Length: 252
Image 1 (cartoon, rainbow, N blue to C red):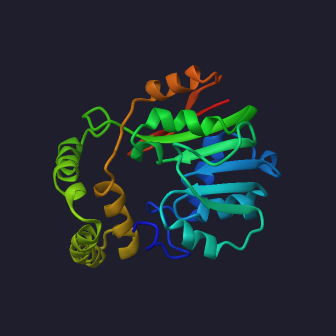
Image 2: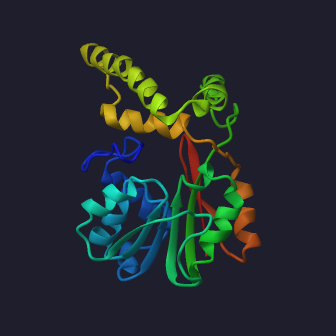
C-alpha cells in the first residue's frame, strides 16, 4: 500500500532526490566518480526512485529488489537499461554469492522478522572488498528522542496493540481519515507565516503506513550493528551518519 501510492516526482520521507542522492553518496563514503560502472544491490528499494537515480546520475548498474507489490510500479516507470527490478525478500535474496560491488539497505532490516538474519543474507552477495551500507532505527528512549520519547512510546503502543491487528484495507481508511487534520494544520501554519510540513497527502499516507503497519519495527544501537559487521568478517565498520529517526553504518 505504501509504495503503490507513490507518484513519480514526489519525495520519500520528505526528502527530494537531491537530498537523497547526497545522503547516499555521503553514506557510502565513496567518490561518485568511483561508482561509475559498479554493480550495486539495492536491497529493499521501495519506490525505486533512488535506484533509477543511482543509474542515471551516477552511472551504476543496479539490481533493485523489494518484496512489496509497489515493485510493479517501479518496474513500469523504469526507463534505464541498467536498473533491474525484481521482487524478493532480503531474508533470501535471489542473487548469487559474491557478485556485487556494493549493498545498500536503508530502513528495511528493521521491518523483517529477523534483522540479523537479513543482514547475513544480503552481505553474502558482496564481492571480496565490497562495501555494505545499512540504515536502522534508534531505540525509543530519552537519549535518542529527548523531546518526543513519551509521544513515540504512545505511538509504538498504538502500533503493536491496535493498528497491526487490523485488516490492511481498514488501516488504509483509518490513515486516510487522519489526512484532513494534517492538511488543516498545513493551512493554518501557512496563515500564521510558519513553514508547514511540505509533504503531500500521499507522502503523509506513506509515513502513516511505514510507522503503524509493520508487524516488526526493530530498533538498535550503533554498536549492535557494528558487531554484525565484525561477525561477518568486515573491516572499517563505522557510523556513516545519524538522523533524528535512525542511523547508518557502513563497512568493507
